[in-house]
Image (cartoon, rainbow, N blue to C red):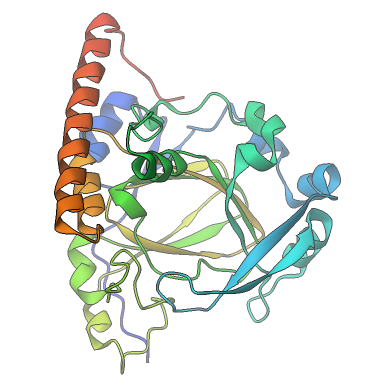
Length: 315
């Protein structure tokens, strides 16, 4: 059965949105937005195609994990090793009925350090970002620093992210569509009661395909209000903290993503980290430490702004 999807709103498309407008209208109101023109100087938008990766990195070897659909937490069932050339062939032959594996969540600079120049300048929306700090607690530093890495996704027509989710640790996400068209299905935070978050990982839904849910198992999903749209090449999408989302490729697709945290969502990050500790003492300590770290970063950002009063514009 498929519910009649009621739309809870639309995602605005803005052209060359200034940082001040972004901060006022979207960042601090926790509203998603699509920005056109933010990537206009990127070489990647002009150069990166499936053929580009096959030609320049065809011999690169990597393993793509194969995950069970609908299993919150991404239960791993093994992986398949590819060369980039063989993988791109799969991508170009991908269909709705037989989609190619999905190359996703790969740290761009680890695999392709020379491509850093192709995504400059970075949009000013990505700052301030409190994730890439030298936090004193090793596990905190590892988790938050990893979230700040720019990730690469390559997939073929019919491929999809394996589960409905919101990004972990309470972060905001930016997705930059480099090549092809990608369909998004998103739900506002107030739709969470209908989305069946997992007990083990509350930011992962038990529903992997919100367009075709099993209403016998998940009857409340019929009440969920989805927002559906397509991200086009050269567009940047801001997905705020706690917005549920998943994706499906309509064509061969290349996407980048980055996560950020700052004063606008630090409270959500602190809550997320504390709730996932196994003992109350560790949860309290985590909350205390991260609250203090956020206060220090907030003071540092304000001090920087006073010394550099010129307005910041989006790249």
